[in-house]
Amino acid sequence: MGKNKKAALPDEVHLVLPSHPERTPGSGPAIVDTHTHLVSTFSSYRSKYRSGKHETIHDFIRELYKDHSVEAIVDVWCEAPVRKVWREIADSALTEEDRERKWGRLEYWFVMGVHPHEAKLYTDEVEKEIVDAMSHPRCVGWGEIGLDFHYDNSPRDVQRSVFARQLQRAVGLGKPLTIHTREAEEDTERILKEHVPKDHKIHIHCYTDSPEWATRMLDHFPNLYIGITGVITYSTNLNTSAVIRNMARLPSPSLRILLETDAPFMTPSNLYGTLKNVRGKLPLSHSAMIPWTAEFVATVANGAEGAEQWDTERVMSEARENARRMYSV
Ligand SMILES: [Zn+2]
Image 1 (cartoon, rainbow, N blue to C red):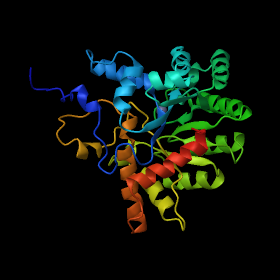
Image 2 (spheres, protein in one colour; image 1 turned 60 degrees about the vertical axis):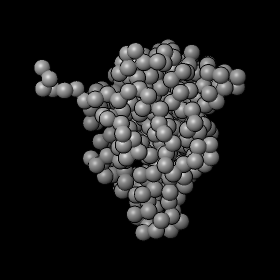
Image 3 (cartoon, rainbow, N blue to C red; image 1 turned 90 degrees about the vertical axis):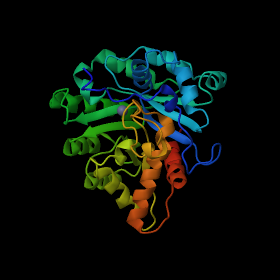
């Protein structure tokens, strides 16, 4: 015993972050997390902190987001069968009074679809439930859907046909699309171009594929955005930074990006530059970490242009406007 010491788990108090060093609390652009998995994040909190102080999602959110200007989140429901609890959570954000009291003024929105991992579980019944959810007042899109040839959790031909089928339904309803694609560039591109009109709103979430593919997609679809998570800060991933550099090099550079966490995953690694006194790694990510991802994007963009044009706040404000264009949030 004692040889394999478990990595230290920081006290849960450290999940409540200090303000990002470049931000003044209460001013500057608000945080909009355009892709987060709230129920999984809360379950991960409960499993790591078994006697943790928060027993409801609402308490947890209010504490973590307070003083961080988290204005809105887009929560993602992508399981098959559909988790029934979605309606309870979405309904709890219907009135202004509830948003104030339960959510601490956070604007809760969601998208729903079936993830490529679970494509083999897609049925008419599941589709009916999703179509039904699309008319909920807090629903802003269909997703995350797509192809994942890295894990191949569902057979590829099933992934392709379920992806195409969901695209057709979403486009028919005029719903913005949240796309998951991994190591499936050619097929994702072909299927998207076949089923989705050019001007449709598309969010390629947690981008890690090649910079060339991003350029092709951005050129073809004028309302397509690239989702940036904390993965951009990882040394194992160079593609996402290359995408940012290509955007920053344009004659009148604008970042066609959305900032997201994909929580509970992808904690930005530069966060630990601020949390110097915390021992161990935080076991989950959450929306208040977005400014660290924005800071990293600014540094990458400045490197491309050779001028200090970008900073955390400018990146956040462009991404905030893009979130409005993409999801009307
Ligand atoms: Zn996701």
